[in-house]
Image: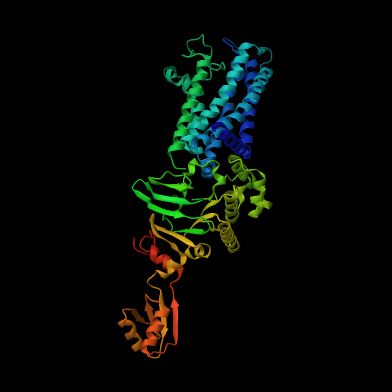
Length: 255
Length: 306
């Protein structure tokens, strides 16, 4: 029963995503920013003179921290546009069971996010290697693990953003909260030693160990209190909490 | 019990403001039922609760005996037009109808059909954000008809339509009711509603004021009267007053006779041997009957008391 009713809800939500322009440009921008910036970062590392503790994967995937932002915007728009346009009332009239509607929406949004990640991460990798030139890395098991982690990270970040948007029911407000978290968390607060015990658990930080973006884990200045896959698990936890919160708001409040 | 909508003791409170207050009524198939009330009477809130968009504070709405939320593929059972502008402006009319159809496993050929039915085929590929209010209203109607539902709930469907569009909706609603469907349509305009609806549910400040037919509503108004012209108004006045009938003198010398019908007056006149030159029923207009019903509950009257 659930599976047979989930399919039409999923297909319908996929059509919604497919038929607005913002989908194409947010997803394309994700790919372009990640891959384009990866080349520039790689090239700047190639030109650098000091390379202590140099991790080619840091240079490879660094661009994802910025490139994930259009993907966050995508996730927020998929949910937020329902409220800004009023479509939510048509949606819930068509699929009045809130859980079914929400499950269909989350799956329909996660699928393109994952597909784009599957394109973006390899494109980012090869673009970065082109930039790094002789300092690049070849595909080995460490790189493959980081790449898989990066794909999951991007998808989960997008799902997390959806959940937050479903809780707040407002595109602008959600972006005003999420974008600073994703900017400042990585670039700013994370470098303050005292705060790092807390900020290392923020959703934009937990996926960084697996992507080699958290700095050398042997160095106490950078070491996190969790390993790469635990970190990704924490992100999955963040995403789940956001989804449950979003679902509860959807179920409780009038549309 | 087919296609019956039952509203039972329905209430909705927002903080200490009561939007809907203990409403109970039944909407039956095969006729257009008008849902009338001044602006702010609670019509839209009631309709949103019918569709399980809003949670009632008390009471419930049953469609064919079950709550809207429990209906499988509800677009095939109930078609609704709530807010015509509640469409993503970046999506085309066709695509809007397509996702709706897919959600309820309605074949996509039906999308073309309702686009034709509502005269939107030529703009099907255009983004809905650029639609006029009339076109948006037609798209809303198309969405409501998508699942060919036996029950239709339309909230102010003629809002913003030109006379041609108003006529189109009226004809459409009557046709749907004639096919045996349940058509429930809200409006704040009595005269317009009376042209399409046989039955009326009138509410004010969230309470039921009348559950009646258009005819009964007018006849029940105490201001309806019979106008009498006679060469001997004084004698006629006396004869009527003696029978306990209220009479007023009009400025032109005619008599206004209240609370009775033309036949009764004729009999009294004959008994008294009085000539009658004119006896015409003067029912109040629907608009007047509606205003009398709702005069105590209108929140914001122009220049009125606060």
